[in-house]
Length: 330
Image: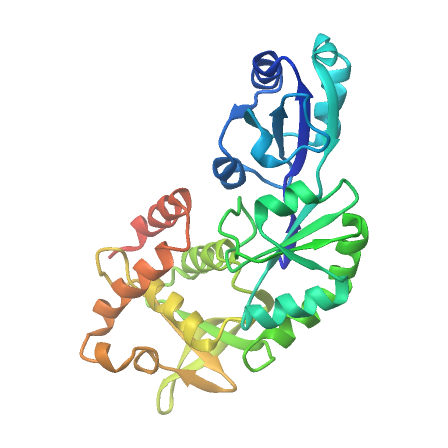
């Protein structure tokens, strides 16, 4: 479960040969011409966004870019390629923008931002201004409620410009980040949950695999332990179940929605039982829905929560999940 990660680096390339430099980045470094939004949507922590401007600037800003090229490589590698090729003669000057760190926000986002602002002496900026104002030894901290395992462009409006190098900021977040995120939660706590898997067909491994696939893709939490255990389905009658202990800042209700979605296939067929326990009390499916939805049957509610879950997964992950479920419909 990622609480923070690096974002792309920003390079400002000043040149009188806009098209030639663009062509070099595209053809030699497999870059892609994008607009700013596309660049952030497609970039990763291993990418660089190159802003190509003319030479008539004392300081370059995002708005000055005649072309923007996304290159899926680090800034050092890009600069060495430019130096070691004829393209070096095309470049008038290179500026390196601030580093970017993206932090996973939970609970009270404003409270979390204020904590980071206080610790790092941060200045509130918007995205484009932060890149333009910041220098190579500065760091921008951005916040998102989305998972951090893939490209992240859905960032909150407020970013913090930190007058410190990324190495220092990263080390500080490693030490303080978990505590700060915990303090921002609505009741300032994480949840230790138990998920019991029961399948009358005995296909425990298959259901375990798809459950772990979704938990990992949604970065729901950390697994603390696994074991076989007994669950009492009715009084004096026990069944063997496989239990997963989960540590998460998602509430039991939020996790239960995911489990209900996975209990049924996309077309409403029952697949498995995922029982959830919090503080030794079972969380029932009818504890989850609100007053307007209580007339729905469980399989109908599962469709609602599957749609909710699909909104948080990308297209390839949805295809993978449905492929995993095909052999499990009896």
